[in-house]
Amino acid sequence: MAGEQHRRRLRTLIKLAGIDDPAPARLEAAFVHESAAREEGGASNERMEFLGDAILGFVVSEWLYEHYGSEPEGDLAKRKAAIVADTAIAHTARQLDFSGLIRVGGGERASGAPRRTSILADAFEAFVAALYLEYGLETARRFVIREHVERLDHADLAKADAKTLLQEFTQLHFACMPAYRDEGEGPAHERRFTSYVTVNGETLGSGTGHSKKSAQQRAAAQALLALQTGKA
Image (cartoon, rainbow, N blue to C red; front, top):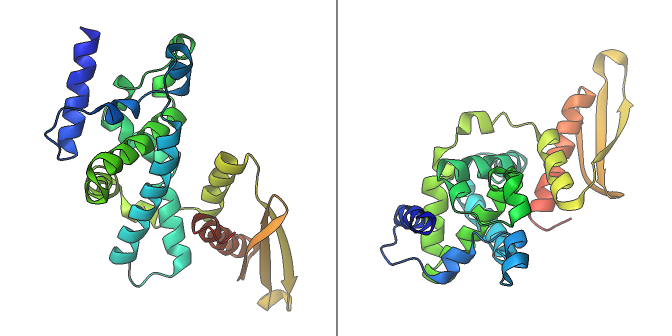
């Protein structure tokens, strides 16, 4: 019964992606956590998650470029960071019932791992990669945009806190916190601040403003853009 329920859930999901075929093995593999792979002796979804992360980033960047043509790159970087954040991806994965599809090892299952944000986000990215590998970029793009990007509140994304997004990004990818250095100049009534942000000792962004907070936000947005476009 459990196996049939799993197959029914997967069939429902792939129909959402516009696919009528029976689920190929590669789509099944997108939901195999490394703990299950260790116990069962097969491959995990980690390699597909790596590819899916890049595909998701490209699709989101392209969509933002087309829909927000007047926004500067720093604002686009903030929007992108919010859209591809683990919390946002995991929310979509929960809505699509990914937790009922993810296979984990016995110990992880007991701890509720299939509902964990990072595991849900990884499975979503792996599924995007599986769609790309089996059916091409257009199928993966349609799924990401229809089921994830277009369901988000983009008015809220416009208010995204660049410092928070940068902190989440660096903690996830580098296991470290960004550091800020502030410099002020000018008389008290016309004070201007310049902030520099470093990650692992490397300066990735700078920004100026009439307060330290605004300068740091601009520096964080610039650093996010550098990290997401591979220019860091």
